[in-house]
Image 1 (cartoon, rainbow, N blue to C red):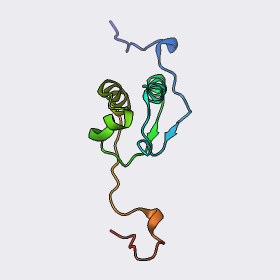
Image 2: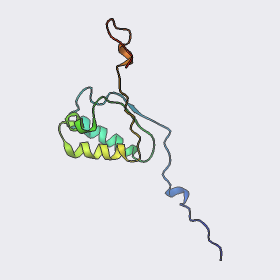
Image 3: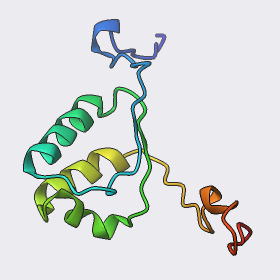
Image 4: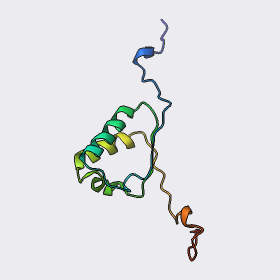
Length: 107
């Protein structure tokens, strides 16, 4: 008796999506309910189908304030974004400010 590995049929596998949206500066401006709903729809459609890049200067614990203080939609967005994700935290002074007089770009 031989044992063969079981494989998903081609139609059952999620198809990777080459599109990779970059959501830059989440939290720079707060989103109203309609904006939060649209962002949730985008994240939900992309969930486990492809990569997303998100930049922000806000800690996750402050995200409810970005989404009209709606803890439900904030939790749903973060659940989908952070599942199987890597978070990279960059600390230090802004590179954009390196040429301003009186400011040191080194940390």
